[in-house]
Length: 595
Image (tube, rainbow, N blue to C red):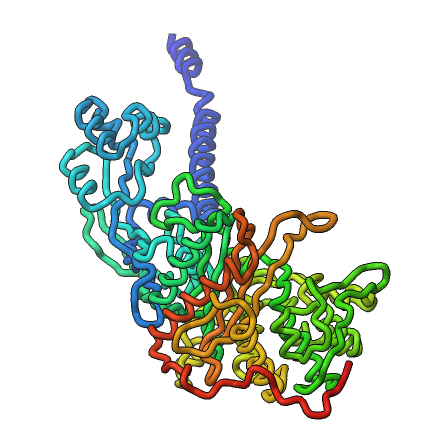
């Protein structure tokens, strides 16, 4: 009996406890190993993920924005300023969480004040419910912003911004340019000096706790205020030039026109206008071609306005002097199968007569009497074929071919302004060069200062730096300026005269070049200097494609020159010089040199 009980006890003795124990122990070990591996992976291989998650919950950045710098003219008049506005934005997640779309009347009121379709606004803010930021409308006025704030639509917020405003409107549009909706310069000096005008926003980075309290400031960067930009433009002269140009373009049914006014001593551009222009404050539906600054981008054959350079080159080389007589009989000639002629036979002419009569025969004979290389170099030295130094975006260098082979007929036509193309700005620099005694200076759109500190600052912001250089002798430059006075006084260009001042200048009328030759359209030009006794200003007027019966430079461009020059001299308080003894109409010619 006892034996059977013992056998039964042995039968129920646990014999499988060991393998279960080891199984549980192994599972626990694997769990701990997995946790250790995961911890090692997070800490060693990818530690940035947790930091990023933590920063998303606690790290915040606050920006202190700075307004864009102002642009002013040389007298401090504002040409571009920043005004405070606000931007309307939406938080789709908050809108959906608060069922804000049910506020039908509020949304309709929002659409009405923004002049938008309410359904399109709702579609924009519900397109992606998970997003936290969607623009509704940029740069609304403070009054509109106040009204929108009073609607109290959950998820609709306002953010302070600034908007560019241009007080002078279309008058200075091509010089000043404009910015886009993000306040970045797109055209004109707004683009050239964008970095200077923008400055840098301040930034403060800090950490918050769960209750929103600041517990640590990690970075505090002070904002860098922008600089104001002072242009060389005199807004009074700018407005005068634009008014006169716009009237002329309309009166002569021209397609466009440009006026450039420069200070001959400093190279400062006092006015630069184009017509047609545009309103930079409202650019909706404005044709793209109106944005083009034609005074620096468009180039034309300057025609007879280039003849003073031919005369000056002959004087510089020594093949002619003030007493030289050029025989242009019989008023026409053939060169290489091509004909060069004057409207009538002027016979024997002095250098002054050649300019007064605008003689193609006279300039041709002067050009062919010089070495080709010397004559061509004078065009390059005068600045044709290169930029003027303003640094304005889109400035063209015109066309002045630099090649080895030039035929005689090409040199002949070059002598009276064909075969070369120049912008109004380049032509203005050339006339400023001879007006100041033969020193070629870079033109600038920034106001110049005589102080060393200011010059250093100007050089630091200038996009390009060019050195001034003497390209013509002072003696011969003055002789040519005196000849230009005779052109205005002796030639029938009374429209260019300015009461009370001695004026010199040259008209130009050229066919518009086109593919394969010349078309039927004209360009009327006038370039001039005043006052002759002590030149202060050089002005170039271009009337492009006049559509009426009048198209010569003396008819369409000279009157604009006269009125702009008259107003500019008076605005600058330049003393009249009409009572000063003028140069005699005909210079005494003893022992003339015949060419």
